[in-house]
Image 1 (cartoon, one colour):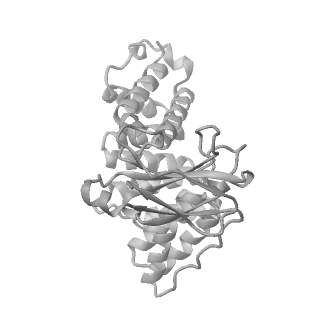
Image 2 (cartoon, helix red, strand yellow):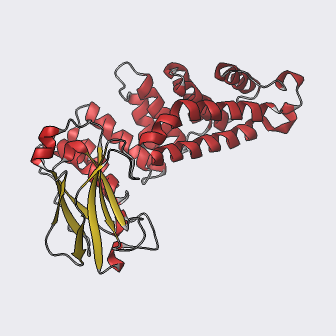
Length: 330
């Protein structure tokens, strides 16, 4: 079997076994994203080694361990060091093994080869922070992030990391200013998670919180809380999740809108709108009536699981003028 297939396959298997298995139980979306990343890395490895190198008898035997695979990749990069994707792949593999200093150095080589690539610069800056004793972005990492944003002002990862770097350095106002453009670029759920951190930075800078965004036309406010008696009787896991679900009454079980919130947020008010739809062809604004439920999931899985606790379903005519109350455990 050619060496690039052996190494890529072993890295894929190792990553899936060590990373995706636990994520699949708790964060399937992230697991899928990582699977795509690993697949892309395998393609990059093919470009690095190619079929001619596979004819080398020394490379024909499949590596038996991840360490063996990494050693072969390192050897190939010593022979052909001008492959940025190879250094990136090596950086990810070393980081997965906890070898953060070596991972930092591999990403630095990739950044040297692609000094204007925002993706590579963000990876290299993040690797430097991970390898630092207090996980802080040092001046070199900050310079990488600033250059990445010069090349692509909408590069979300670089903007997020640069805001963190400013927060770490005590520049709360700078962090808030850096993060604020993200609100217009990310999806509604991500924006909702970002706003508390942005407002906290503004508070530390002596600035007022950002104005509450106006509800989207057709949005549905849902107030969710735990039944007090239920909460007093049941010991809930801190990593449990609450799903707020709107579905078509009598229709398919697939939600027309869904939001996920942490247990610690209870009680909270969710605002469902078309941005929360998992189906691009079926939106909340297209319906005249919905059925609402709130599901407490210990597994963190959006699909119903044994042990989940749901609120009583409530039918609502749209548009609804007042928030709809859902009580879990009643």
